[in-house]
Image 1: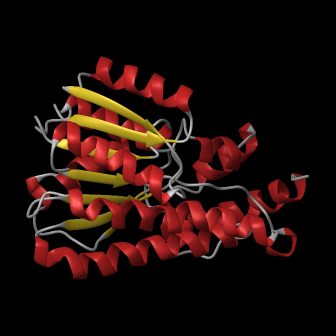
Image 2: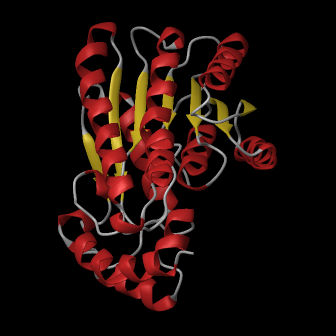
Image 3: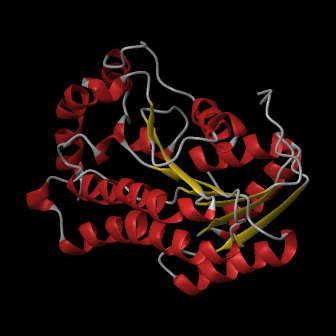
Length: 272
């Protein structure tokens, strides 16, 4: 992907950046010349991600292993990035957890786990990063989900968590604007090659149901999300903050509810 953007020598920190959408975003910034730091739970995935980022052309790439729920691990990764590269120009917060479960079958621990990863983890990253962000000029991109705005069967935990993430975006846009920091969210639709799609569409029939429910008639690609992240982080979006940008082929206009009403209850019943 030729990004058409220049982020040479800018520092990008990606929480949850070892796979899927978040790694795709990190690679896009790497191809645009940025210094990259990625943070995730798996040492093996972090090592592989750093290799991928270097191969993608990153001026430099760092990897940190830790959990967004662990405030000390988050702090160590951000401090390590700052000590190596200086002020953080672009922060991407995308760590997330998901599974399908009807509310009556969802344990309190299961609900709490997703809220802790998605919402509390996002707060941990954003709150801890504030001291290391370039002021003015830093840009933050949170990764939301259609469940933040559309009630979805078997996704009560994700709906609650991602709605909270969207409010983090809006409140911090108000509070941090005076420091010259812009913060926006991307709301991906169904994206191929992600863990979310593997879980939500494990069969060809489920995938076809989702694809047919997208107004543009296709499943999205990771590069679709990465391109949106580059745009929001660029000077072309210099007057955009507090926005929740759907990148979903129109799916959240109604197709997501219809498709998930068909697919998710069956998946939820399959859980042990």
